[in-house]
Image (cartoon, rainbow, N blue to C red; front, side, top):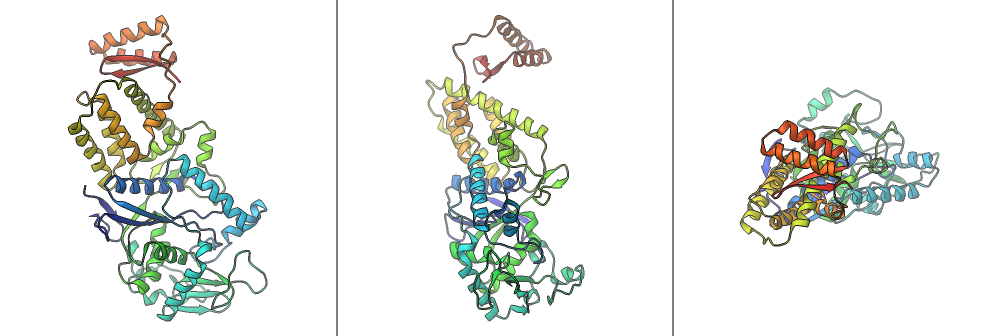
Length: 472
């Protein structure tokens, strides 16, 4: 099936053509492990999971690399500020190494809770210092670097004419809007490749290098690790849209002089999950995590379902009202799938119907990851009277592989008390609702369904009529 993706570099939807037939190599920016990841961060990781699952269901062999930033970097794009890892260590009175491991473990718990397939490789930046130094040396030999005494080795963006192309800008535009400072940088867009350790104190994370003791700049790790694990050219690089104008532009600038152009064929960027105050951020210390949602009684799959109701290129507002609505919708599908599992006795798979719905749902996700459209098709599938039970179950097995929503798993776990007989008054309301539906009195039917729900029961509509199910 044809796969289409919006390429940030070309600013248009393109048909995906792999570098190697039948294989996909992609790199995603991972967590900086000095704190828990908030649910806004998790939207990017879920989107990357959908991208991977889509390629797998299309028959591709996927190699996915995601970095773990466990090395101390400065907190701003301008190469200034406090080291994030040291900041975390001070906050919790732990070593930077223990902080890194604590939040790596936290991150892995979160992605497992959200049924995110773990990447093929999750390299830690501190394990690739040698490769980062080698890359800086290559740039130095090519004439792309300069030294600011007492500060570090910097990349000279004036030597790379295409700088800023990913964000639709050129160097003249970037320079025109930049402030003049006394940092010693030749150009406002120049960035650190290697920072020197202060002379008057020892940092928690620092290494020997040809330029003296210091630590890598923020951007160099992604170039070094992706080249090491995916090769000098690979198919897709993904990340949050906040990375376009600085981090990813810097990655391109430091990589293409070494390996040639283009370094990456497709750039895919995800929009933010917004709180009532705008973009979610760790800077205030006031943010929600996956574990916070679990502690409030939410199934992590309901949160995943909510994320898939939007499109990755559009901002999404988060609210508990929205999550509640998503949770209700998710549970309703589970209940219907549970009924399918109970009714699956004599049907055989209708291969023609399976292929038709399979291609319809996979086609939506393959067309620039239209997950919301796929969810609409899933609702239509459940209502369809032209698809038998066995075929629907097989389709939901495929849907769970594609979207990772665990409908079948949750349906198996749903407590359905078959032996309990509904109270007479509930059964009477169910009978009245069936008659109201037959008479096309939809308002009365809806009113009776609400009353049945309030009584602790649910009506699941099947091909044989309404079925009363005790709420779990």
